[in-house]
Image (cartoon, rainbow, N blue to C red; front, side, top):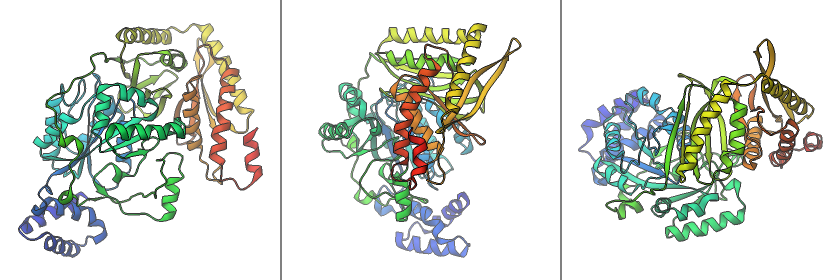
Length: 547
């Protein structure tokens, strides 16, 4: 694709003075003469038409979408969704962080991707991109525009405490065309959004609002949220979704070719998707929209205030260590301590566990029911812990920092009695799992402590049905969301080529194996019932899952 675009640019230079129709026609002929299939050049032709058609005024400017929203709403998840489904569209992503650590860049692995495209890494951490990191934003935009990689589009993810209005000015000065501002809203935390000045401003300037986490609330709450968003934004369109999984052309200024009805139906019926009664489309090859001639300015461009204020009550701290947590202690810490915090708004970052030292986990804590430690693959660098805590109570944050240090100390100094008790608890839990045909134990990890073999971790999961189209990965993803959302116990997840998708648990707090098993069984009933609803044709396939 890079070779096609480079050659195409060289050819196009001699045709600038001609009309856009003649340019495109002659270029198609030239491309055909060089042996490039016409259908494989659609995106390049559309891109060059915008770049060289001077009658459209802004055709030569790089397009941009700003993704904003309050803390923990799902902005990074949306960016990951865009990158995963971008097809051949070359997208540059700039990420801004409020804390000292650029956690989102670690999650997105942007540093490695930047170097693969010939870009040096520009940190937008430790401040709002419209204030403290404004100079870095300008530098990042300059490098992106002048980069020889010829990006088709730019996506900027703001911090949860940034007001994008000032960013619009930076984009204009850098020669980047702002197409729209997408504001992601945690539907469950809409009250907090409307009560927080900067979050309310993010909502008011939105060109489209994504009501995320709709799977956690009732339909009545969603309808009420839509009415309140419409009132707060003056009629801006609100789209229901879960995991911000929406069609790409909804959030980017791109056109996506339609797919077959079968594929659209399949996409709509997946366990993770957007909630809509409208037709669903998916793309394999994006095209840039030819919209500048009828372009409607984004809301934020119609009113650019000179400055804005931040909430002085909000502060953060970063926790970085080269020692691992005990999984048992960390699970108990999340379930019993973090959920009881009153001023904590957001926690995110990378965690390292003693029981699975080779695996990186991505931890998120946000809203009321979202806490997860997802499998992030093997470590490709020195394993460590990097977490950012954001909250409104500085004393509470200091207390949490001290408790995390104690957590590490307890990992290094585990009494032998605790190790043996944990091993016995895990063996009992594995027995419960093996006795239920809906579940299976993938592995019981052990290690030798003082000459005694002790269990440290149980990896388990629900059993899917490939024949019925119910995949284990979907089942276990739904189970961990349900269990962690209830807040009684906290599970972490992982995957491997041999074992597939699995969940993991250890014991170190007040939770007993019997109590944990009862909680899992209760959650599994609702998950399995929903997963098999409408897809099971044989009663014998359903009954074993319902007891």
